[in-house]
Length: 207
Image 1: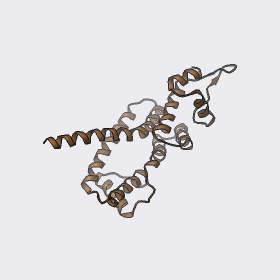
Image 2: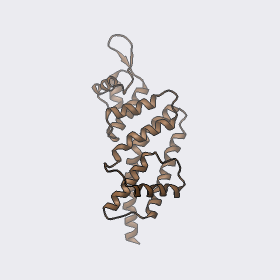
Image 3: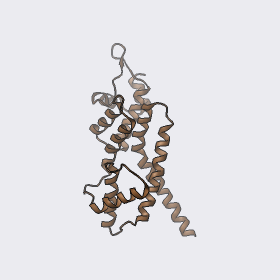
Image 4: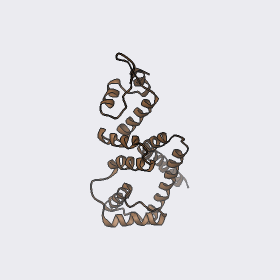
């Protein structure tokens, strides 16, 4: 397809597409003579991935490029790509203050009770610990039961994420879904949580 069709199909201005190519985010199309350049479906998929990271994930161009470089690394394990995406896409969720040792210990205890291992270097550990601190500083320290129930829900989310990835036959599509799911999954969880809160509130008021 020509760039005009690619722009229409991906809802991305042609100038933006050319900018992504110059910045190394999008592979160049195939020159077929004169000023004609052809693009394929892989370009359309990549454009949607880029826009999800920029517009939903609120990442910088440089950070998006780092994630895409990991995605395109030949022979890289899917787990490595997922780790790079998690690290990049979670930075905006981390408050500025460092977590306290006490909150880190509490998060480690939650992980231990849930039977999770290998989480020591995961960025989620710091995010969770800082949230624990924020609750305590607001005058609402979280009980262990609350944290354990959130961990149980998080496990269900993770099983859904990886289950959706596992059914894809193409490794490149698997890694793309991992990246997109990391960007959009938090927003999906937020929207459904808001709905569930309203339902449970109404049920408890009516009981």
